[in-house]
Image (cartoon, rainbow, N blue to C red; front, side):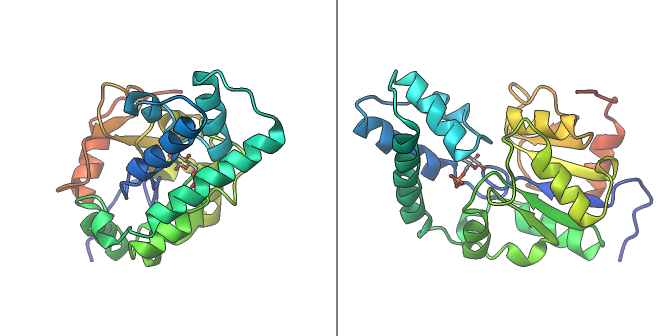
Length: 229
Ligand code: BG6
């Protein structure tokens, strides 16, 4: 086993859009709901919902459509969306895991890194099971465990605490601007997954996990200036 002489010993991943491409299903289910309510949403609008809780997402969508609902109606609508989303998730298989993810997780595990998952989704465990990723994780924090939506750092802080590590010893991988902010607010080192056009605050940005190794993750971070939130 290679030993890495450096300060990181934990890695915490967001799920949707980082490890598995589920955002297309969230989009389809939200769009169907908006259509039922008499308006439409586009992909660009949906991108801004990445990382938000289900209720926070619904509230944004209702705002876009100028639709007012009571609290009880909102709860009902978020359940309706979730049922549609879950029907779509039935087709998720290990083929939906994004490129490079499994080799990178395998390398981290083999090298003795502690691995956490922090997701706002209440379906996170279902997605991990369908994609056969569950056994990689020492800790799983999902939408059932957290109370605060990103950019609050709660979900990452819970994961690092359960891993027994200080935030400064963990690298967070995030695909959303809100998630990057949450990691920075929690004092984590954050690598954005996607485009540096919108992940502007991350310590570093990678387009995806293809060909990512521990060595080049540490190399990218070593070249990075210190950023504060
Ligand atoms: C996040 C997604 O991971 O989970 C959001 O980025 C989603 O799009 C949120 O709304 C909550 O997911 P769920 O499955 O609990 O509705």
